[in-house]
Length: 616
Ligand SMILES: [Zn+2]
Image (cartoon, rainbow, N blue to C red; front, side, top):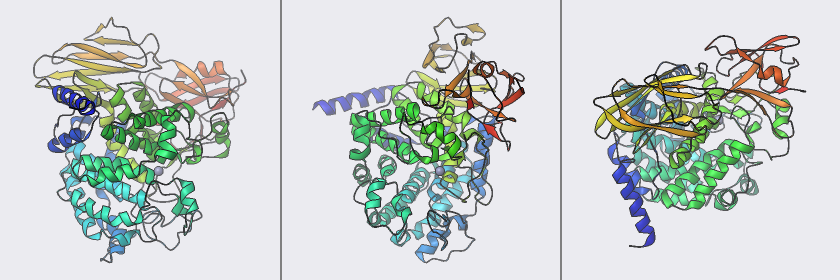
C-alpha cells in the first residue's frame, strides 16, 4: 500500500467507524460522496430534513421564498429555453434579466442580460425547500420543471449568449440538487445533455476578466463570465453520480495561476476583483481540496476567506462596495460611505459567504467561521426586503451615510436566484454533526433531530436571540444517552457569559471564539441555557478613517435613524441603551437630543446610517 493510499484508507476507516459521512436519509448519494472525497472533514452537515426552523424571522423569510417560487408559473420559467429550442413557448416574458430582449445594451440597459440565468437556482431553492419540509407540491414542481426543461436543452441556447458558464453553473446546481434533494429521476441525464450543449461555448480554461477583455467580444457583457466558479458544482455533480467526466471538467476550470496559487501563498490578490464571484470561487477551491487532497486548495480557500473577513468587510460582515474588493490601506472602504449606495451584494454575497464558511467550519471545527456567518445573517440577509411578484428584488445593502433599503432597478437579477437558496440553507447552517454529538452554530428557533448511538435524539431551541441575549435548548430522547453538545461561544462574548444545564451553572471555563463541548449522559427533558454577556463596541470602517465608527452590540450592528447628521461622541455611542428588553430599538443620548438606533431587520423605509463621525 502506498503512503497516499494508506493515508486515504485510514481517513476513510475513521469516517466509517465514526459514521460522520455515512448516509442518512439520502442513502446512496451520500455514500458516493464520501467515497469520492479523499479528505474527511471533522464535522458533517445535517440533511435538510433533519433541521426544522421554528417560529421566528428566519422561518418567515424561508416560508415567504418557498411560497413565492412554488407559485411561480412554469411556462414563464421555461420560456427562454423553449424559445431558443424552437418549441412552443406559451406564457408571458418574466422580463428583466430573465427574458430575451432587443433592448439589451450593456451596461446602459440590462434588460435581456442573461435569459434563464436563475432557472437552476430557483430549481435548487425548491429542491432544498422540499428536502427541508417534505412538501409534495414542491417536489412535484421540481420534477415538472426538470421534465419541462429536458426537451429544451440545445447548444443553440448559448449562441451569442454573454455568460454561458455563469448560467450553466446555476443550471448544473439546480439539476444536481433536483437529483439529490428531490429524488428527480431524470435530472442527472438532463445534466449530461446540458453539459454536452454548453461545452462548445466554454473556453479552454477559467478566464480572468482581463483575459476575457483581451479576446474578441461583441459587447462588454461578454467579458463578465465567471468560468472560475464552475469547479464546485462539477465536483458535486461527480460526487452525486453524474459521472467521472465532471471531475476532469472541474480540474480544467480551477483558476490556479491567477487566483488559487497566489492565495495559497498568502498573497492578498482580492483587490480589484469582482467580489461575489471570487468568494464563490473559494468554494471551488475547497471542493478541489476535498476531492484531490491537495492542500494548496485548502490554503487558497482559507486565506481567501480570511482576507475577505479581515481586509474587505464592513462592520455588518458584508463586503465589496460596488461589487469590487478594495486595496487594504487605500481608504476606499471609508470613501464608499459617501460615493455609493451599492455597498454589499446581499443575497448572492451572503449565500457565497455561508457556503464557504460552512465548508471551513466543518473541516476545522473553528467556531469563528460561525461568528462570521452570524454577523452576515443578522446584519444583512435576514433584513433583505422580500421579492415582489414582478421580479423586483433586493440586491444591495446600503451603508451610505444617507442610506435606505431599496430594490434593484432590474427585475429578476442574480440575487433573486441566491435568495431562495440561502433561506433554504438556514437550517443546515445552524447545526453540525460530529461522531461525538452535535454542534450548535446559530442561535435561532429550530429543532434538530438525529440518531445518536442508536437513540432517536433531538434538540429544540427556543430563543429571541439576539434581541434577547439568551437561548434555551431542550433535549428530547427515547432513553438516556451520552454525547457532546458543543455550543458556539462567540468571540465577542463578555466574561459574564454563562451556560447552565437544568438550572445549574457549568463550572467549565468558557473561552470566547471556541465551541464549548458539554458532554454528559443526557436524559429526556434536560435543558441547556446560555446567557450571553454582550458588550457594546465600536469598529472603524478602515484604518484611514479611524473616527468613522459603527456601533456593535455583540453580533448586531446598530443603525441610527432620524437625525442622521447629529453630532455623536464615542462615549455616547458606547452608552447606548435598549429601549426595552427584547426590543430592536436602542437609544443614544446626544447634546441635540436622543437618537434611535435599530437593527437591520427592524429597519423598514426610513433613512438610516451605519457609520458615525466621532471626534472624541
Ligand atoms: Zn446577486
